[in-house]
Structures are given as C-alpha cells and as structure tokens.
Length: 314
Image 1: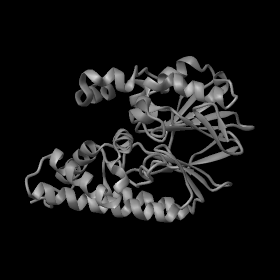
Image 2 (image 1 turned 45 degrees about the vertical axis):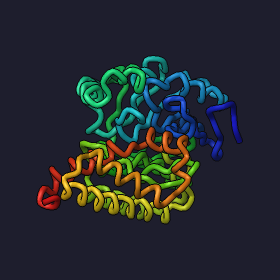
Image 3 (image 1 turned 180 degrees about the horizontal axis):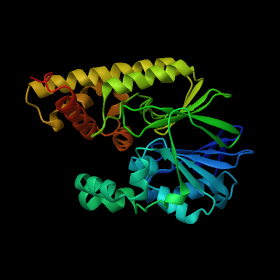
Image 4 (image 1 turned 60 degrees about the vertical axis):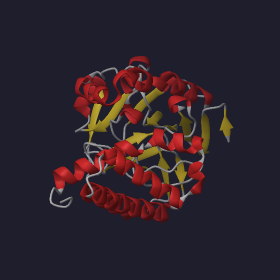
C-alpha cells in the first residue's frame, strides 16, 4: 500500500519512508514502527532530508511529534545526520546508538571536520546541518540490549565490519532484521548487491563474523536502508560475501600494480557492469553511487590493507 509519495506500508505496524536523498527516490530509507510501545524510527537519513522524513511520517498518518524512539544502526551521515535536528523538533524523541558512536552525536565536531575534508564546499548541500544531540536525550546500547519500540521488542546485535559503531536491530517475534549497512546495498531497481566499504573502519574479518551472527538469527526478512525489504536472506548474504571477497582481490591486484584508489574504483565499476548490464543506465548508476560510491569503497579497501594487512599488497 502506498501512502502519498514517500511512505509505503510494508506490514502491520511497519512503514518504509523514502528520504529522497539528493532528490533521488529509492536510495536512503528510514523505517517507521508504530504500536503499543510508541512510534519509532530506525535510521533517519541526512540533515538535508529532515523535512522529507517528517513528511513521510505524516504521509503514514502519524504525527511526528509523537515519535518516541530514534534507533540508529550507525552514525554515518546518510543514516544519522538528521538526528540532532529531529531531536530539536520532536519533544518526545529519545535516541539509541552504540556506545562508540554516542560521543560523536553529542559533539559532532570531529565528524563534521572529517566529512568536510572529503566533501569540501558540497558539505552543506549534501548533508545539511549536523546538530548536536543533547546528552540527556541519548541512550547508549550494546550487544544483547532490548528496546521496546512500535509493536514489540528489538534486540541489539553488535555488527562491526562496515563501522566500529554498527549495530542491527532484530524483531525476534516476527523474524525481521533492520541490519543497517552490514548486509550491504541492494536497490530495488536494478537489484544488485554492492558492498559499502568506506574508510576508516572497514574490517573484513569483523564483517564476515557479523554476517555469521546475522545468519545464526535465521531472520525471515531484511529491511535495508539502501533500499527496502529483502526476503531471500541467505542468497543475498552469500552474494554480499562474494562481492566483499571479489573487491578485496581487485583492490589487492590494483595496489600491487601501483593503481591509486581511482584506478581501483574503475575496476570495481567494470566488475559490476560484467554482472548486470542494467547498470549501463545512467539513472541506475547515479542511484547506486549515491548509496555506496565506488571511489570511497576503493579508499576503504586501500586503508584496510595498509593498516590491517600491510604485507599483502607487496
């Protein structure tokens, strides 16, 4: 069922809100939960799409002022950049985030400085205003914690690999997992699994272990922030593992051939074209690049091998 332009009902008490990141639909999602435990949002998009998110909540026929919980899988700007601005507008909202990410929400100075080095003058247009979160509105979570939200309880699963401050949220009763980026990017059209591997936290060993933990839960459905539900859980994760390994091999080969990150990114892009010719469509390319661009993914591998396995590129 579609409500308005930005909210789609997926199941009882569950909606996907399209934040229309950079004006593109189907790239960055937030999930809205409703029920006896109050309104909750899983990931909230960037500071540049706050009004889109609030419009999505209204399109689902709810009052944003009633949102009680903001659950963050991690603090990257496309998932959590809107948090401070939302807290300032939503009087009942409490924020739940992993302990390693919490300090950067309370004082985002380092986060802003790091992102500005990458994005420069495009920073504001891309990510909007990044507002600190008041400490009294923030709750630190870790592996095994349980949060009541929407129709029931969500168990916290610590899932590093993409980021050291990454968690997933599992609705055990329904078998629903909100995995953040640990289960990769797969947009709805065309459906291609792509690893989001930006610096500085990429760690393949941790990532594979996190995927093992996800599979051990036997979730029946994934709800990806990039983008939407996935029912074929095991094939999806198998494809992500294969891509993580394949890109690792391409990155190593490139580093041994003295390619820079741009050269390695080109190798990633060529490997995707071999898998899915639909990616020759410029609109599809743009949407996937907004979700997880090749250059930052290549930079993540280069940093990972240089810091974690400096002997391998030799």
